[in-house]
Length: 156
Image (cartoon, rainbow, N blue to C red; front, side, top):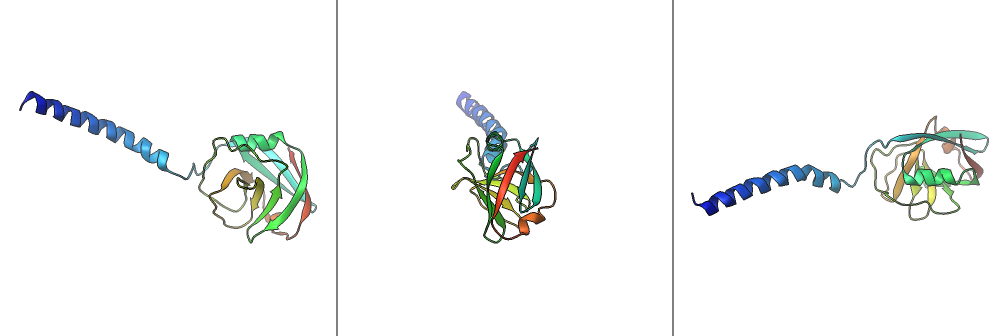
C-alpha cells in the first residue's frame, strides 16, 4: 500500500467519523416541529369573559413574556372557525426565536403570527403560523360558548 493510499484511507475514515457524529445534529436541526412539550414558566394568567373564567400556564418563550408585559388587558373574544376563539391584541408580539411545534391539542393558547391574534383552541387544529404560548389549566369548556364578549386577561 502506497503512502498516498494510506493517507486517503485515513482521510476517508476520519471524514466518515465526523460525518457520522454530525448526522444526528443535522437531522435535529432539520426537524421543523419543535419540542413536544415546551418548558412551563409557572406564570399563570386568568382569562375572563361572559362570567366565565379560564386559567392558563404560559410556556417559557419570548412571546409569552411579551404578552405578560402587556397585562392586564381588556379586549374582546370572538368565535373564529369551528375550533377556536380569537382575541385581537393591541400590538404584535415579538417573533424572536419562534418556530413550529408539535403535540397540538385542545386547550392550547397560541399566538397567530400573521395577524397578531391570540387563538384559544377548543378542538383539534394544526397550523404552521402559530406559536404556543401556553395551555389552559382547567377545563376549556367556556370556550365552547358561542358569541362575542368583553374579555379581561390578567396575571395571577
